[in-house]
Image (cartoon, rainbow, N blue to C red; front, side, top):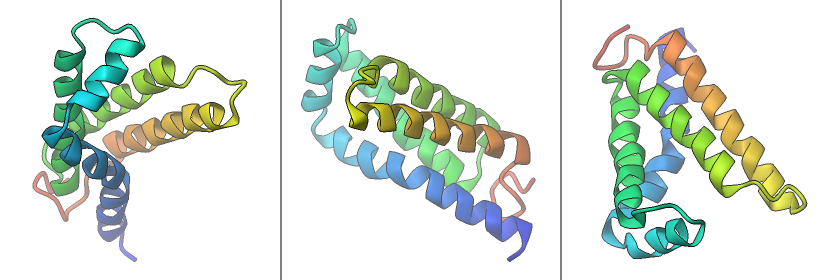
Length: 125
């Protein structure tokens, strides 16, 4: 498989989770906003719409390879923020695993930001 094809497949795999969770959230943001409020974040509905924008707009940008470096940085920062805010109870094995899953996902996006999206992208780098 060529490097460009590998980068395309990597972009698809990396954004699948964010698009699959962000798109439905656009149509029912209340549940996530309730969770944001429950963990003590101010303006939970505003935070929810920022999360939706990062997941959906950032995910689509990475998917098509548009401004990939910036979108990848934004999603990596979101993944780390999510780990630090939402997965801190390491006594719970699921929370422990979710924390490090988010860290690993951030690592993938940071690697993509350095590698670039490849020739099979809008940016064509």
